[in-house]
Image 1: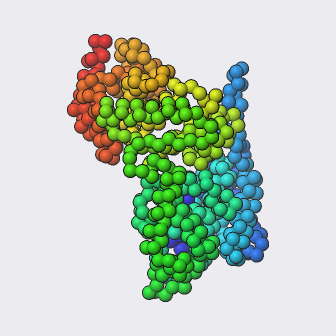
Image 2 (image 1 turned 180 degrees about the vertical axis):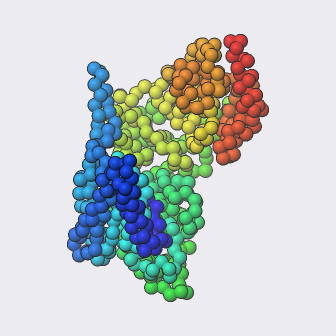
Length: 546
């Protein structure tokens, strides 16, 4: 939800007018063309929205001419083959009514919280464009709300951007403003949207989600400008605003903006900050970092120590034997990848919860699960947002198979060691083959029996005797077209590479790949001592004799 509040209101107004003009011009052009059937003009509806104690709040809806049917978000098939579509999303009229009512609730909420008159705003909503972003500048908000977007999410987006409108109203015009940090601007808007959705205060789940979003962030003080990952200054900034509100009261952030607006040319944001919150920025940064460490210990225990070892925590009635099984399996995983593959250690939190506490634990540690009807409740959920690595397991009779637990734990452990960004040119067989090879080798040493659906070596050898060249499995399309041979050939190809260069070379490849901006060719040659072309030729000669 990036906000471009450095953009002046007149400029954004011009952009909006230009957008509408272009839509109208396109229709006129089509209507004028003799060989083209004219399309109906896009609907532009202006709704004046009444807010108690407020005036000048309007919503402009653009579009809405698409077929008005709901989206099939998921489905289920019964034993007799009948497919049931679970529809979600709002129809056009429902989206209009929802946003009009939501604008009243948002403006009223902030007016009562801050004891202010709701500032005027023009909200421009595109009904046919599905863009998750939104911008706010001056008295204007531009956002989308198509039928495939969830209403609750768009409500939070609107609340976030309306907070930017309040910020703008309280400070001086853009062309003569005192510079201020982006962590404060976006942090306050993120915090405002969260408390609006939660009824006035951050919940534990909200705070945990913000902690995950800011897990890889540096010190707060470094986010003055829009540099780095946006999650850092959005999520970390929201946690900082919560600390400041608890310290100086809910009205203190508004005092900051009023101080910014009243500063002369010699004033600084530090002066405004100290006047609003009663402490210097440096004193705040030091206190906040101490608070942040405590939050990490509570929400992400593995980040609260200096060792790269997974931490197990529990909730509810979890037998000691289950904890011991996980501890044994984690120890095996660490030594397996560290000693055999020289892959280093993985650091994460494993949360074991009984059936009564699982949903709440998973929602707090990982985020809420799917709420779509017919969606089966999983026995585990995880977050791969570095370094906020957390996996939550349900410990119950329904989720009691130790092999499934060990399989899921291995899959997660391996995923942490593997890069999460892939080049489109990286061969599909290479990525899937390394994963498959590592799993098969781990099955041999696991403390419990793990049943996998991966192909056996005998089946893989049958694939080698086929006619599909390994090169054709480089793309996802090729892998799907030759699905019978894909996993077997991928396993044999990586097995060949491991024998040629040693098993540690597989993770040398991943490390080189991650450090070389996704150049898989160079990473391949560095790890295995062969160019991809040389390997393809040698592998095809080898398989011809199998």
